[in-house]
Length: 419
RNA sequence: GGAGAGGUGGCUGAGUGGUUGAAAGCGGCGGUCUUGAAAACCGUUGUCCCCGCAAGGGGACCGGGGGUUCGAAUCCCUCCCUCUCCGCCA
Image (cartoon, rainbow, N blue to C red; front, side, top):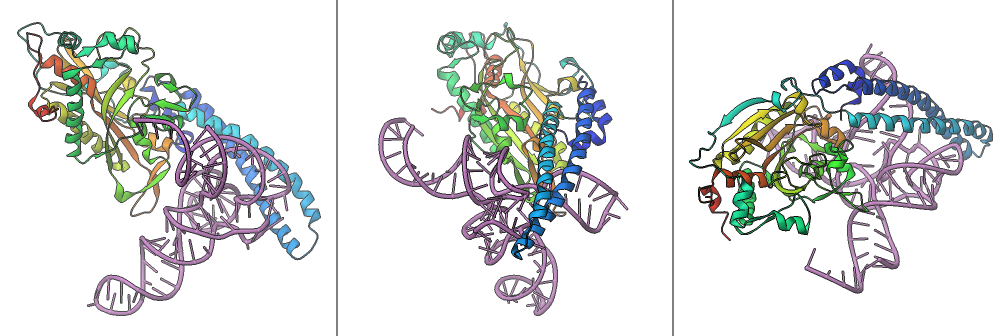
């Protein structure tokens, strides 16, 4: 969330910045300013009273120790105590309202985010590799997979429902090999492996920004304040919630393989065929905690780490900068990596790498102590897919397919395909 | 699922309802001493909020939330978490 002090001290800057997302937060910012004025007013009043109460309490203690009568002061303080209670309870809803309003405001965009309102205005940064050429009409992955008997959507529909799949035989092995391969690559680039819980509570979802605005996107476990993770970002980023890290610990770089669960509410009729958009998919996620002044360069290296996987798999891809209107709620700057999909004759998102600045750190209360000044500041958090495993499998099947319906496997994966 | 114990500052660990933000020890930081280091000794050591240009002043925080009281780390309620024993179980 944004810094309350920043919002009330420069409300017009906040409004102007978020216009670039196509959002008008002027009314909500105004509300916050009004509430904050009221809040300060009450605080000043109640704290003055508390001061007098504290002083009286000490006087009472002294009198009692001396064996003298404190009844007159006691009587006076009764009224003060009630007034304090009244003011305190006035404060509670004000602060709760401010908090709720702040939670609804998206992150400020970095200055270099491209202007635009939709996907169409995203800026291509680079394209690597030529779109794969075929001497025959390439098939979509679900045809290849079903024909080979290694993807079974029908059975998944019976056993569970729509948007699930069984991977069998070679597909299952390939999926597992991809996970191993990705972890091995990132591990070699300084990421520490972490295997988090696949279920989190609502506080963690609020910490990373999924809650309260995107509640309907996650699966809730009935009867608990538990939710299936929509991405490893949630448990891994919240790993340091409510902590003050020493600066020498930074940057912290984690990689996590997890399945991800998304309700895909509102995407009915979109990508219904195949395993492009599933309720459950595997992903290797990269998460970084860094010093504020380093987050921009850490974003560049994060994208590089994700790209490395596609390079080694020799899959053609491009990198785009999301425009203001397409940038996610919590992000200040996002690169998407899109892999070539021959069946669609287009690029398909396979990774999203974002710099969240201090937005998540503020929500999750993750800070660090500056080594030289000893001052405490919020860290910056970043994360990116490295990569979405299911979609990588799609890309492999489609880009490496042969005319007879079979497909080959890149050499780098062979040692992970053992058993 | 049944029974019990406990949650205090970076850590260990005291704490009688009344100058307790909290003893003590460890750790950390600064200093004295030393050619340097260690040891010893001295000092220092949390976060958030409000007022203030600042200096400074004030408030809050002892797992979370509520209550009793002039006053709560200390009493009461509730939730969460950790640990031990029994049962069940991958």
